[in-house]
Image (cartoon, rainbow, N blue to C red; front, top):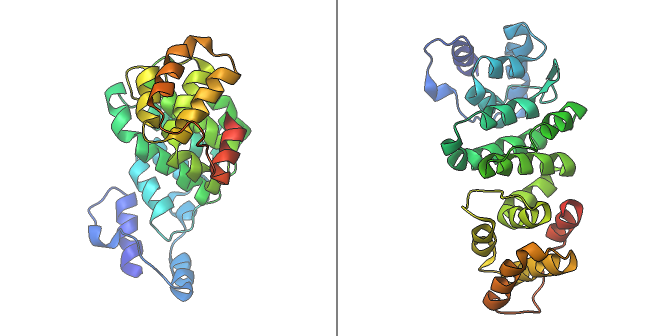
Length: 249
């Protein structure tokens, strides 16, 4: 533990350190108590918002380590000048070059979900932040914004996991609901077809949504799904998935 703290301090100071000690340790309660007596991140960095401070200095991977793998006690609900950790992570990923958004999307999902796993509480600043991006037109950025907006509405790790597990279905339905091209496929039709081709239940969900809400502009997609589906009676039976669909769509 002393070696762990020593090398973590070196890493925080951008000095050479032993990478072998910066990893996931399974400390017991006694060891954890001793670790906390050895190191306090707020005191070491002389700030009440050390995680936001580290992200502002370009150390987002270190913050990810502290949140997800280290046993150092941290507060995920820091706020500094309207900046929250949710805002910081989302800003970082939205500022990536457009061509990098696709391969970094799973990382973004994981970072945001881990915030909530670690006890993140949604802030009003988060909603204000997301609203300013809803006019974005690039489908890849809209994928991030959609996920961010939905996690704020769900705010529970259990429900966010359902969203992540069925993200392509939610993306397809959101495309139809909003009329916006969202995601990493070239067209809305491609998004819907590829996302539902292995599930009659998902296809029926979208067919019913288009019909019920009179989304006539997506009649061609509806007809394509009608041709593709293998079982017109199959429906989504997972109660957690149905709960999230009802909340978001």
